[in-house]
Image 1 (cartoon, one colour):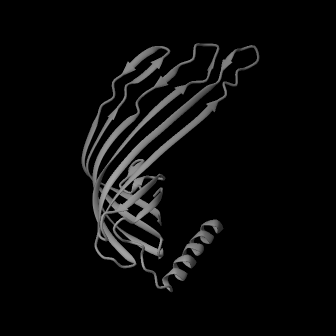
Image 2: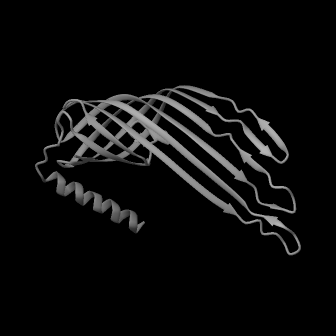
Image 3: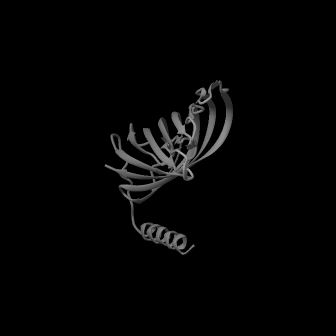
Length: 218
């Protein structure tokens, strides 16, 4: 709790100092920013600001219009000891997973001030892989693959960007998923050998919080 309070106080101090300054946002045709999104930016994995907890960029076509794109790559591995009793043979288990996503959006800003509300639309694509080998004792190891999603989403959103300094800002936004299609890979087991078909899902309209993004302008 103390750490949380310290973080909140630090952010409040930064915004308090920034609020007392005269800040002119570094926005013009051809301006660019690097974007670092922190999870709250909900959907993907990839949200409209770019992937959740991902990295992206924005390019300004004019003072009011911009395009942005984002990328997310996540890799996770774990191991599970078999813990075989004395006199038995065991095989340790393991799992690995990878998520890849991209997103692209078109933005329109409502003013040129320090606080810049905006709206926009875009799409995002995510896919994942998963491989699990179960820990075993004295038997053939079972390996499971599949049942991982590939999702394509068309979304609209509204948000606001606040400039702390001329070339540094934070933004937050809400997202409305207009259309979202998810298909799953087949679920397979090696022992005993089996394959299970997984159904696809199709959704129309659904909210998702887009989280917070740090922008560094160049």
